[in-house]
Image (cartoon, rainbow, N blue to C red; front, side, top):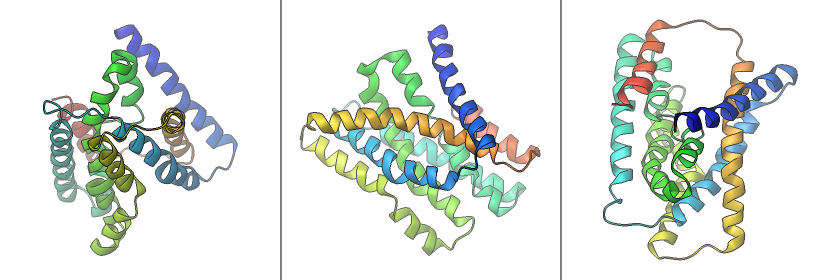
Length: 230
């Protein structure tokens, strides 16, 4: 499994480097790329994943547990950030600490290590993290520059919320997806990982410079690499 883990990480790292190189070579509007991922690719992946879930009593608490974990880590990091950093920086911490890298990075690793038979369980567990990111997480980010009311309005405009709800309705009513819809989901699942990794590279390429903020890094690393593994 260790060899498989590293062999899976290599192409993910290559996508980040490719995004970084293209970002330095071409003037790419990263906001447009991120908008495409948020409003098109991610909702399709979320809907297809939720619609194909096989619910059972032993698994139904998985998304509840992961949402609670993500929320506790995210809110805890925000409280620490408000105390030791500025409010704008503190508003970035809930998503930085609460997500746990379970989406763009975690999905291909889970599929590589455990196979497609574990995909349903993984998506179900990751559903709680996705709900956290698209609700509390996005709310905190928006609150860095907006009022509470405007931040909540932005959250309600995210299509992933409605895509997940629709997918869960399909799963609960045992409505099978047609073959073209499954093919579309498979295509978007690959694009989800590729675009997500390249966005990270583009963001690094367009950074004006690098300056270490020890307090911000300490809180972010503690949430990501200590609390989540625990």
